[in-house]
Length: 215
Image 1 (cartoon, one colour):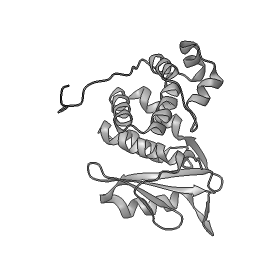
Image 2 (cartoon, helix red, strand yellow):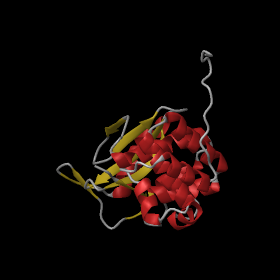
Image 3 (cartoon, helix red, strand yellow):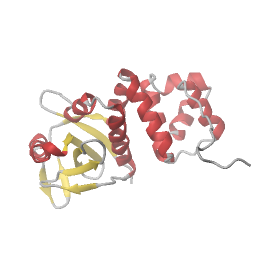
């Protein structure tokens, strides 16, 4: 099952988790955390655990050890609440619980009268604003080699470039084909994949692995 990832906005319309993520100075850590959050879309939560009152903790083993807190609204939307490293863990959990004013009914978490911001939009804004993060995220996803991660990244880069219409014009592909290409079920040909990369000012390159034995 796929999920729609959203960021919680507080009563002042501040994206709390997004603001924290943008504040990280280490582009590699920021890229690793972003990739992990993006994987929520396909139900891949990795190292995570329930905390209390409907709040869950996702852990990222990088640097001081980062934590991202989130809750489920039904099973349709993941609402990210706040993030921090393990030195502020208890305080972050308390803050996460208070932000959402989350009520529990069985195993279903619900939030009421709250606005949110899509994850892809948050990532696209960071890709536009931070070249070091852009390079780090591309390297992180491509080096990891997970096909689903690559398609999500293409979609986020497309949004950062101005959207599907612009990429459609650059590639000569129609928007419907692009949406299908970048969907969870996407299976683009190498030709079309290369067209999209070129439109994003990227290209595939093959190099020999270090330590390889020459023929």
